[in-house]
Structures are given as structure tokens and as C-alpha cells.
Length: 301
Image 1 (cartoon, rainbow, N blue to C red):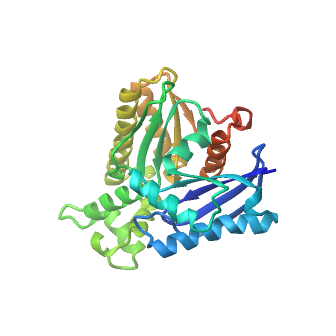
Image 2 (image 1 turned 60 degrees about the vertical axis):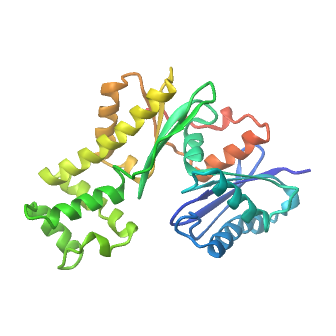
Image 3 (image 1 turned 180 degrees about the horizontal axis):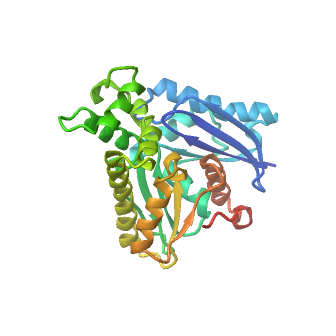
């Protein structure tokens, strides 16, 4: 009898897999390298997915023949052909007897917060995006321009520091961060730019005008993505999951919640205590006909 499912959260930095029983109890967890198909070559992507998945099997002393379903939420997946390609990749090492489902990582982020219920998820970390679904099954995903993300805020700060009218305190902080020379944006990797966010947030909290302007503009961009999604879905009960590293920081979280409340006063905010890999586990359980409502923690604010 098959009595396990596996949920996978595949990102641009790492891949995390959770092996769970059919009651939602995570038995094993493993991680490996990145699996975003836009930033990872095909061989590396397959190797990382396989390592994460099969490491959980080895930890739990479980075989593929014990697994009912594997659900993978992968960053960067937007098109049907990308889903199909990734499914074929996983099928190269997972037996046909195991159900394999691939979708975007926003789905598992939303499910980690609200389960199978309607809602909206706004993600802001290295990148940013927004996705939602309503009670009628309609889904909507905003176009991805990374506004309000760590990489967006870091890029705005670098441009400000290198401009003719640079804010002195901001320029000094960035120069010190890079050990004496403030580099051109084009010379940095995306994750290096995103890593500037804590410095900018700290300056904003200290009252630096340029840092406050940048953070506020970024937050307003994410707020507009949420409003765009709600305008399409017309949710009656507005549950908004705030996911990603920036969403749990200040002043980002409080500014965003205040902005949302101005336009959507009845919105309920959810800061997920479950990981996105756990959200993928929930998706695997849902797809096998198992109710998960009793498994979700109360994350509402």
C-alpha cells in the first residue's frame, strides 16, 4: 500500500523536498542545489531534483513503490511547455507508477497559507510576484517584473548612490558594504543586489530620506500587484498570504499592510508558519483526494 507523498519547493538558490505520510506528518526533509529552469542548466536541474527527492527516501528508508504522489512547485515556471519539460525530467528517474505533478512555486506558497481555500499570495524575496484563485476556480498571476523585491530595492539604491545627486549617507553605506568602491549594477549577480535589502531597510528605519523613498516605492509596487489580482478575482473573503523573506521584515511588512488596508479594509493577512515545501506536500495530498483543512495552522493576523 502506498502511504507517502513528497512535496518539492524548487527555487533559484536551492531545492527542498519533504516526505510526508498521508496525515501530513513530515517524515524526512532534504535539500540540494537550485532548480529554477531559467537559471539552472538541464543536467544540473535534474541532478538537484533527484538528489533532494531521493535523499528523503533514503532518510526514511522508503522506496518509490511506497510513494503515491510527488508535487513540485518550481520557481520560474509560467508556460505549459515548461511544466511538460520538467515533468519529463522528473520522469527520467521516478517510476511511472508514482503520480508526478509540476506547477509554479506561487501555488505552493498560497497553499502553505490557506490550503485549498481561495486567496492571494504576494511573494517578495530575491524576486517578487503575485498569484491568486477564487471560489469559482479562476486563477490569476501578475506579470513578473520583480518590483518591490530585494533585487529591485537593491538596484534602486545602487542607481541612487551612483547618481549625480546621490544621498551622502546612502552612498557611504553602500561604499562601505563593498569595501571602498560602490560598483556598477551590471557587475553584480542578482543575489548580490538583493543582499543589499537589509542595509537599505535599516537606513529607512533610521530616517534616511532616499532609503525610505525606495522602500516605500517598492512596497507600493507590490500593493498594486495585489490590487490588480483582487480586481480580477473579486474575492469576497480576502485572505492575503505574505510570503518571502522581505514580508517578515520591518518596515516592509507594516507599510504594505497599511497600504492594503487603505484599499481593502476587510483583508486578512497570513504569514505562513509552514514552508513552501510543506505547501507542496499539501498539494500532493489534495491531488490524491485527502482533506487538509485540519492540518493547517492558524496564521491569520
